[in-house]
Structures are given as C-alpha cells and as structure tokens.
Length: 259
Ligand SMILES: [Zn+2]
Image (cartoon, rainbow, N blue to C red; front, side, top):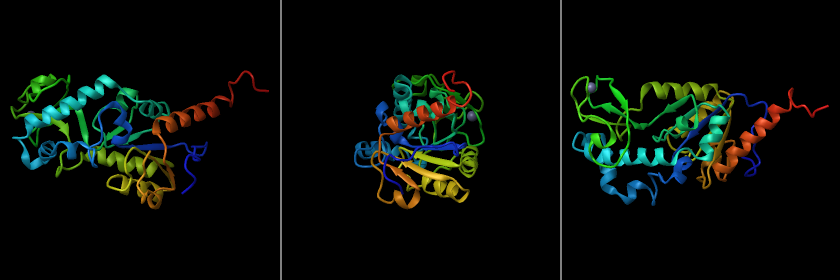
C-alpha cells in the first residue's frame, strides 16, 4: 500500500478495468444503500421489498423505488468520474443500476445488479425486456412500461437484482473475464471488501494486475486487498488520470512543438 494519492496509471497499464459501486453515483443524489445513512436504514419497508420472496406483492414498491432512482439518474446525468472512465476507454464492472456509465459513453459495461432503466418479465423463462421512461409512482405505466408482458402476459418488473436472486450470468461471466484480463484493476466507490469486489480484485491480482481502491472513506481492511488505496475523491482522481494519460499519449508523434 502506497502513500495516498501517489498512484497514477503509467504506460505499462494498457488494460485498465474499473469496478464501480454506489459511491461513484452518490453526488447525483442517488445515495448509497447500506450503512447508517443508506436507503435500507432510512426506509426499512423498502429494504423488505427488496427480497425476492416478497414478489409479486412487492411490485408496486419496487416500481416506486427503482422508477424514481432511474428518473433521478436520468435527470442528473453522469458525474466527472463516470465521464473520466468513459474517456479512458476502460471496460467497467458495476454494482450500480443507474445506467450512468452508458450515459457517459462507456461501451463495455457489466451490470452485476441489473438496471433500473430496464423493465423485464416476471416469467422465469421469458426474455422480454424494455427500456423505461422513468417517472414517479407505483405502477409500471408510471414509467412507460405495460403492466403485463406483451410476450407472455406475466407481470413486468424492474430489471434490478433483488436479495436472494442470482447475479445475471452473462454479466458475471464478463466481469470474471475482464478481471482476469486486466493489468490495472481499479475499484471506485465500493467498499472493496465484500463480494464482488472482494473476489474480483484478488482474481485480477492473481492474473498479474495491479489493484487500486479509490474511495473517499476506505475501509481499514482495504489495505489487505488492494496494492494501493487512495482515500480521495474519485471525481478529482479519475479526471486527473485521464488528463495525464492523454498528455502522455499526445506528445509521442503529433505534437508540433516537440523537437
Ligand atoms: Zn414475458
């Protein structure tokens, strides 16, 4: 573990992979879910609705909560951190459901917890899904989605992974592949010490990656998981990295002022 703030990606880091959590989106007003100020503590009834065994009775609550989240995310748009990650052209593994990496222009995004900007079908075998026009309210129609799946007639639901539900297989597989391919693995706005960060960062390290945590308030144990822990604001650190990288890249051939 190095001194805080000293680490910057260098030319040797050609395959940067980011793992992002709710801390990256906190300044949009989306807040975090866990912890004393998290949504689960402030709204216990919402936490209850997040358990898969409450379906389908929990659907109105799920539509209300996730539809609202999707609307806040869409209105606010991506943060400087999201934009820097997109400009670094790095693939992203995210625990966030707010669609802000795609909104910033990231092409490769593994969404481990689904997306509040998509609806899907409650039918286990049905692959219907649709993009929402998020609004306010407990009905799918409040978010531009039919209440019944047009394909099979089952109720529709937000495409967000609930407690006791499996992570989406394709996104999980992509995450593992990205972690194995990374030469620099950077966790941002996630504690880094619970799943999936706790297993993805060591997986990346096993395959030769340098591992970094950028978090304004990193957990004490982070130093045992990551090579570098930067207790700083990701919205300052990541744009700095991006400027640094573009300056380094831009001086090699095309700089008209070089000798
Ligand atoms: Zn269906």
